[in-house]
Image 1 (cartoon, rainbow, N blue to C red):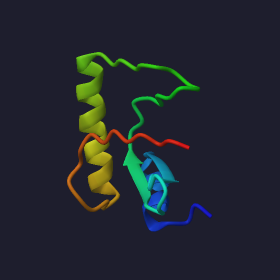
Image 2 (spheres, one colour):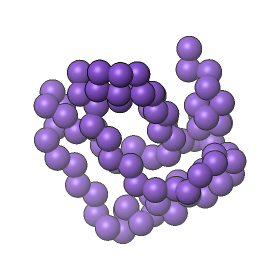
Image 3 (cartoon, helix red, strand yellow):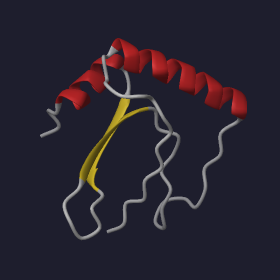
Image 4 (cartoon, rainbow, N blue to C red):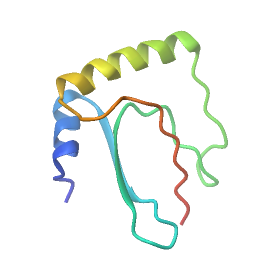
Length: 84
């Protein structure tokens, strides 16, 4: 229903969020909150690039928004493969 508190906080702060089962045979759900660099997959694109200055700016802006939204945890770059 997209009503998880992290999803609501993300929307209010202008952040992206993505929720899915990444369990590969078992249920293991994650909700990712932050900025989206790209979506890579067999049916989408094989690679994504971002210039270093744009990446640095994205990190700074996203970190500030996560802090403002009181999203717990340490901000970090997450790369996760979702295979169906």
